[in-house]
Length: 96
Image 1 (cartoon, rainbow, N blue to C red):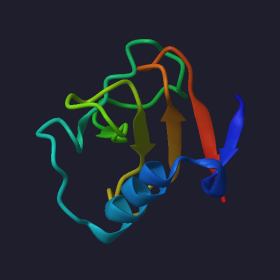
Image 2: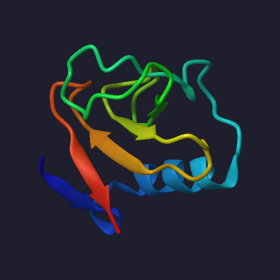
Image 3: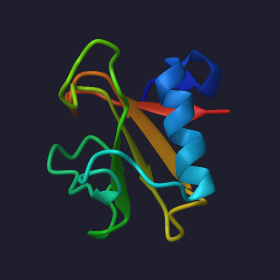
Image 4: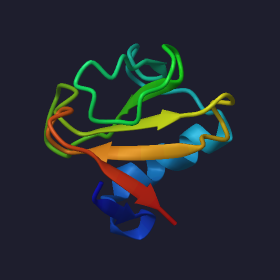
């Protein structure tokens, strides 16, 4: 799977990661909801392992296509996070 470093994410993506790690609240109701991995592009896990978050796109009034999907037993300490800028058509593993 392709990778992207945390510093290569758009600024809004870095903000979303920090909010996840801090347990902060999010603007959209869907943020923090279970991501089903229906596309099967992420490693297979049990339902509820992955959660999705909107990465805001400047200038858009709707959620747009950018998301961060994180997986792990503890939401604030994800085992792995992935970035998609094309609404789940492809993912990049976020590396430090």
